[in-house]
Length: 134
Ligand code: THU
Image (tube, rainbow, N blue to C red):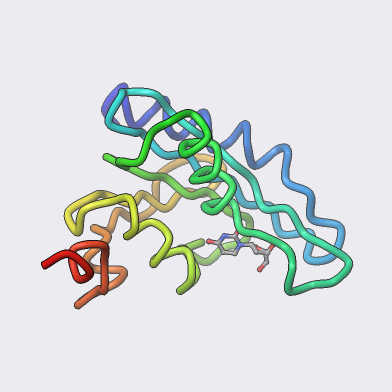
């Protein structure tokens, strides 16, 4: 793991510990490295009105945008469970808004990165901001 990726892992794990998940009990943390070199992290935040809950990736993106950044260079998601905690469909599109197709998205468990995908692998033939300007 590069030092940058290790920093993402630590930030995502710290965010995961903050997850507000009284309904699913499924903790997720996400961290993104932005073009300014800073790391922004977020957790999933559930709601008694279930569909209103939000994913960890959305929380991390909100933190990045609030800091004035709009370009993702690398992302990492850590989730509970034995399976790969890959971003949901909606979050793939959210990441695509701020990340180029080649951006790496690491999927981790509590101990290590289990798989690394590019955004393009997770969301092929994506519709992105360029579609509206080209
Ligand atoms: N969840 C995320 O936060 N990110 C993902 O990539 C997958 C799912 C959350 C949503 C919900 O709070 C819980 O995990 C169970 O679906």
